[in-house]
Image 1 (cartoon, rainbow, N blue to C red):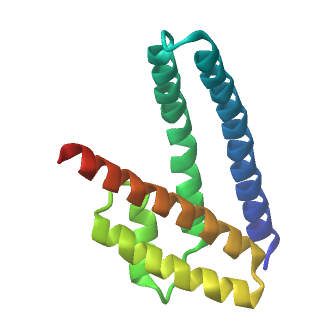
Image 2 (tube, rainbow, N blue to C red):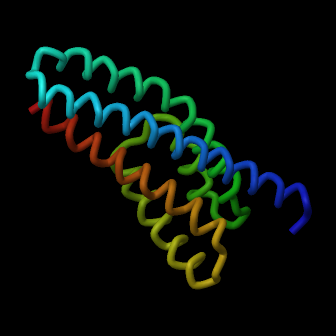
Length: 146
């Protein structure tokens, strides 16, 4: 592994850790607001909804960048379908594509875990978590439209 690859991996890890840390801080503030609502009644629900929406809007660009970096770090020349789905993951995907990507990620996770490749395992775990969250979002939006 050359030094540029190592630096790219370290930079990616620092970016991911920063987003997770900042998201945790934002989440903590959101929890404080929810506790205040419980104490003082439901008059501030609209304010909390705005805060959640703002938080989602603020976090989306970070996740987009991270997803692109992870897609690049998980690239392999012998897995064109996997690479295509990882690249497309930053855009809108169908349920079938998400399910296929989930299967490929689970397989990659098992392989990278058994190989002891910690960076790849971390990257795959982060993408897999996002895939599961997107599947849940699709299921919830499907239930709301019924």
